Amino acid sequence: MSLIEARELTRLYTRGTETVRALDSVTFTIHPGEFVAVVGPSGSGKSTLLQLLGGMDLPSSGSLTIAGKELSRLSDTERTTLRRDTLGFVFQDFGLLPVLTVAENIALPAGLGKVSQAPSVDSLLERVGLSHRKNHRPHQLSGGEMQRVAIARALVRRPKILLADEPTGNLDSASGARILELLQELNQQEGITLVVVTHNDTLAAAAGRALALKDGKLV
Ligand SMILES: Nc1ncnc2c1ncn2[C@@H]1O[C@H](COP(=O)(O)OP(=O)(O)OP(=O)(O)O)[C@@H](O)[C@H]1O
Image 1: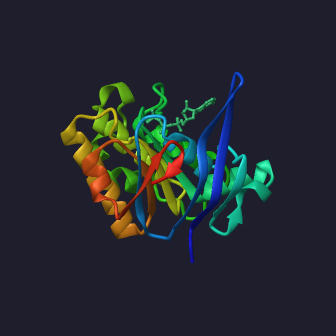
Image 2: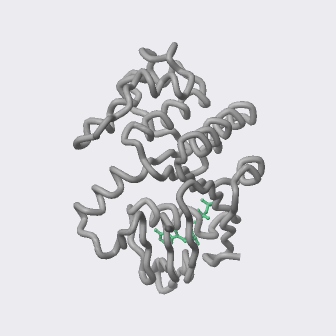
């Protein structure tokens, strides 16, 4: 069974008098456990696609079904619930709260509604190799460490799918390689489905498959 199904997914934006086809009739299926890279030149529609997959935006036309639920048919609350319980997010700029410690940053999403059998913060820290950084604040960490905290935070609610937007974009190549390794482990050992927007060729090559976009279309 498919986990993500996009059918003729289209997102139009209006810019002045112009209509931009940011995503133009894109159809694909992603199965549970896949590692999919989303690649393409700047402006090709990658972020637009990720926003739709994350339920943060709705398509102008076409359909998107995640874990059996068509997003356009859900209420705002249902969409929020799906996002919270099924998806984890990782961003290029990490998105950590500077006033909170590493442990507090990781624990934050667990407070958003009930989580059954949430993994402990300690086990997540161990998972990403940062047990020794538990009480540090983000500014005391390297970029690679910050991204590992962000990944641990994304795992608190045991997502089926991890959506990542340029997760290595702000990292040097050695730190980027370690983040890739961690993502691969999550995919292979825990079966988490990965959809990763990237300009990083090594990361794209490590994925099982690439969705390549150009001018909003799959190529
Ligand atoms: N809110 C918006 N209003 C108008 N046009 C938009 C909006 N968001 C994106 N676009 C346009 O849609 C197209 C796709 O943009 P998108 O950000 O998805 O590309 P991208 O592949 O993620 O680019 P990059 O690699 O530079 O992040 C671009 O032409 C962009 O200018």
